[in-house]
Every structure is written in structure tokens, then in C-alpha cells.
Length: 294
Image (cartoon, rainbow, N blue to C red; front, top):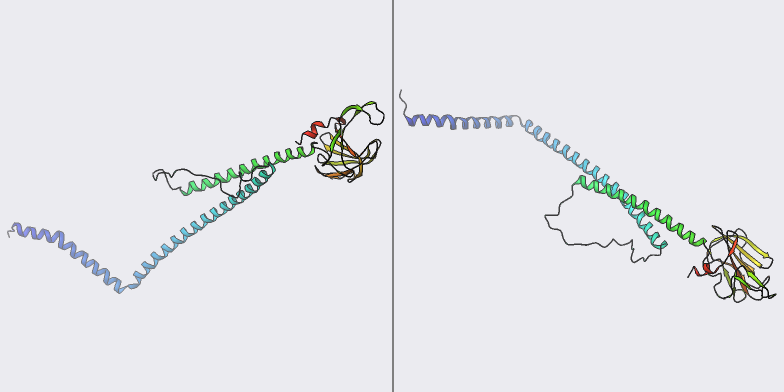
């Protein structure tokens, strides 16, 4: 037999195109007929795929819930620290006598700036976000400790200011005699006056010039009715010639608290209070302590 070029081309097309197509069609028909004859296999395959997807979704949901729980826990800790710092800041503002308008902890701090270019802006990744939360928590913890130290320092300073004598022992009246050598009003001799005298109306209020504890309240030669207050750090103050003592031994008094009523008991020429400041048992000039409160 002799074959020409056309027959050879026809045979080649049949071998490379028609034959594979026929085989694919036959396979498809075989598969369809198999599925028709075995419908349960398709259902099993679909159910298996759905179960796998449900399991994957469940795992993703669990991971998301765990991450949210972790974030909620950290957020709660941060909120607690912020509330604590706000309260501490309010106390410090009051203790330091600062302007509340300048340090308003109920409002967020003023911030601003131009809008960043879109090329410069980027979304923060989850690991970086978690690290930022941890860093912020540590910063809040550190600031809290520093503010507590500052609060202790301010309280110590205020306490020291309370126990150091400062101011006048009267609310109304005038200075009638100074500390030091003077002419005695009874015998005319030059003698040392261990305090200062403030004259006023009978019964006027006499106040403690610092916080302390009453160590004497009664009559004493030359002083008449006397109140003595120990302030610590070596300071003691005395208030003499009272018409009536209003505190007793052992009482704790605050700065500015009324301790007696002005009188003229003891060695006195008229209603006044004899005011003394003792430092380490020695009478000192009260002048600088009287002017210290101005």
C-alpha cells in the first residue's frame, strides 16, 4: 500500500486529538455513571470537606477568643493603672497647691500635628501591638512608683512645715513687747524677756503656731495659766497669762488650733499672751518664726 501526505496528516490528527478526547469523554461518562450508581460517595466527600472546614473555623475562632481574652486582661490592667495614676495626680496637685486647670486629669493631654503622608503610615502588626502594650504597662508601673515617691516627699515636706513654728499666736491683737533685754514693767529694772507679748481683748483666741502635743497645761509661777506644746525636732512653744486653757496634757493640736483664751493671769499688767519659742531647751527670738508664715 502507498500512503500520500493527506492520509498521513489525517492519521496524525486522529492519534493526537481525537483519541485523547475520546478517552476523556469515556472517563467522564464512566465517572458520572459511577456517581449515579454510587451517590453516597459524593455525599461522603462533601461532608468530609465541610467537617474539615468547620474544624478549621473552630480553631481560628478559639485562637481569636484567646487573643481577645489576653487583650482584655492587659487592657484591664492598664485601665487600673491609669485610674490609680489619675487619683495620685489629683492628690499631688492638691498637696503641691498647683493650678487644677493646668493639670486637669479628667481631660486627655493636648496633642496635635500635621497629617502624615500615606507612604509614611503603616498598620501595626499584632506582635508589635502586644509588645507596645507590654512596654506601656511597664512605663505606667514605673511612673506610678515615681509619683508615690514624690507624694511621700511632699507629705514629709508638708509635715515638717506643720511642726516648725510659724505665724502669730493670735488672730487679733498687736505686738506689745519684744524679745530680749527690756525694762521690767513692775520694778523698772533691765531684765531679759524670754518671749514676745501680744496684747488684745480679754478672751481673744490664742492659737498654736505649729502641730504638736500638749506637754503642760496649768498654772506656772510668773506665767499664770500656761499652755506648752512640744512640736518635735527640738521645738517647744509656750502661751502664758491665759484666762482659760482649752487643752489638756496629751492632747494633739494642729497648726492654727485654738489652745486658750487671752487673759491677764500671773505676772501681767493687762490682757495679752506671752509667746515663747524654745529650741533644744533654749529660748530663742520668736521674731523669725512669726514672720516665716508671711
